[in-house]
Amino acid sequence: FWMGSSSSGSAAGGAGAADPQLQRFIEVETQKQRFQQLVHQMTELCWEKCMDKPGPKLDSRAETCFVNCVERFIDTSQFILNRLEQTQKSKSAFSESLSD
Image (cartoon, rainbow, N blue to C red):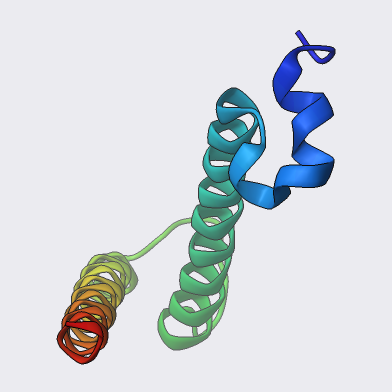
């Protein structure tokens, strides 16, 4: 698995010759890490916003606040991702038009 021709060519060929399975594994693990970071940020943000005084039970006001906070966080994150994607697409289209 690791001793295939791609591993011997990777030193000379650069990143493009790396094992595709390894690249995919790294991508998946990176996505997992980003997701965990987002969950941590969301938890911290919403906890600070919605929990005045922790008690033995979550009251309906705090529960509603958590739901709204999480939904806003997700909507905002999605908006930012879409915006970054659009920016990246416009940059690549601009680069392609320059190379033509």
